[in-house]
Image (cartoon, rainbow, N blue to C red):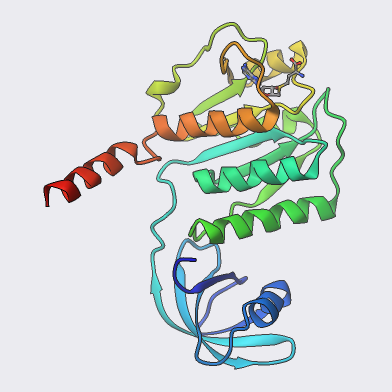
Length: 253
Ligand code: SAH
């Protein structure tokens, strides 16, 4: 675990109360007590260093002693729209990996061949996974997970993205050059049932370019991680070149 424990709060202020689930976790699992350090996150992108001042029965009071800019967010906006899956663990996997890879907008949708159904609890659970994943990978923003009961609504929710890619299992070739991407990018991956031809046509009509992920049919969750990874790489968000430079410098020293 790197550094102080991290908590999401609605708003970080000089004196901030930790309540509800985050409080229970801080008190009963992490056993924080007066004088301990913590980092408060409020989705503003900033990180607030704080000290526990008081532990009560239902809340914990923290004093903010410093603030910094975070600095772990991707510089490019990437959205992942994914077909809601039957297996809860797989939906959680997709959300967790998307957050780790730096995705800023996450949308689950129902489509023609998906037989899973969403409810408020399940959506809240996915949002919790997003927050937990954000803390673990040291992001200061946990993307909200939204849900659309239809593909069209989901596709339209990312209308403003510069590039829009649609992973189409029956596409023969890609109609977008993924290696040349720059700027905001929305990605669409289907559920285990895949997409219908009509849905592929709808996506195209809404400006989404079909892309193939190769000759094999990947599981939906594999496709989501694979496409997000190659797109993040193409956008320069995985820092692979920077990493090589840094290790070279270290060797030279
Ligand atoms: N049931 C479908 C497969 C669905 S795979 C069938 O039998 O054909 C789930 C999703 O992963 C697809 O909708 C697509 O978005 C993505 N996917 C999987 N393999 C892919 C590939 N080779 N090319 C592009 N997208 C792929």
